[in-house]
Image 1 (cartoon, rainbow over the protein chains, first blue to last red):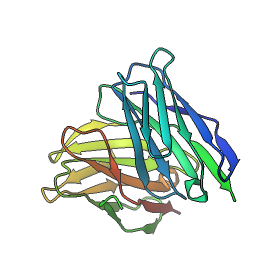
Image 2 (cartoon, rainbow over the protein chains, first blue to last red):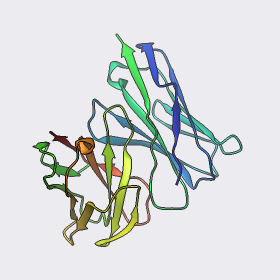
Image 3 (cartoon, helix red, strand yellow):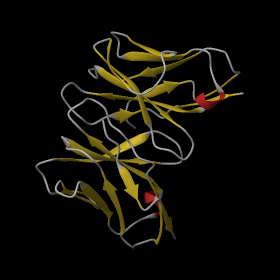
Length: 110
Length: 112
């Protein structure tokens, strides 16, 4: 299996600004997923992008995937206080499990 | 709400004891995974059950074991608790042939 590594570790932005975080991984993937976690609670699935896709949108979220660079990015546009959370990427190889990195902690200031 | 519930919410045990954590998935979710999340870290995969059989395991010792039941509930059992077992334990379920996992709110285990 492989583990996603998120960058930066922490991000602080003003409400209304955009937040961008990156994910790198090591081997080939089937898909890559992004999850959000609020205050040590359960994770919430945000978006899944397959290895043959380059970009995907869901509401204020935009995810890109560059398999040649083994990297992905998550953009949150027009951030809100409710976006304050930790964000994790989870590359999924051909095995069955998700491997999470340490995440990016995003703080949105009012 | 993901429709996945876990019990108890919090638990305090002492070193050497045994603990059972429970998870209830949505109907039809025949795959359940368990994760351990230490403070400040991402979730680490413990194992996965599919149709009541373990079909994958992470780097955890045999004292971590599980069960999955036909009613879409499951258990995580940890024997001989160690201080380092203190963590948030998350279960996640998914529909057949899909990749999205639906997480429960977790059980916070403290080992003293």
